[in-house]
Image (cartoon, rainbow, N blue to C red; front, side, top):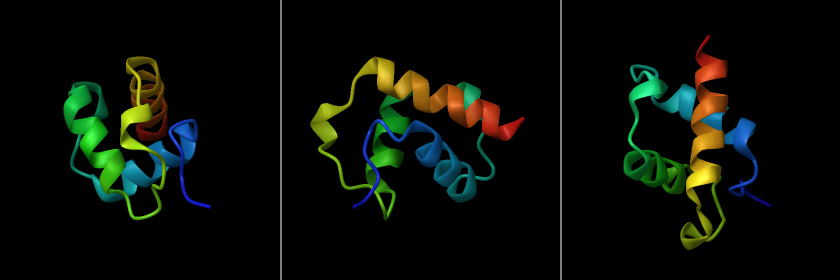
Length: 66
């Protein structure tokens, strides 16, 4: 089973490995959504994303970057 929207920490870790040059604090939610959906292990419905889930992913990514 692949990543789902609720796997915020795992998604954040993968994003930090793929987008090493990006400061996650400044990522727009539209870009974040596209990047999550493009992850090879992501298998959830793109339409099930919410602002709250994207914010949780972004916050986990910021914590991961620190």
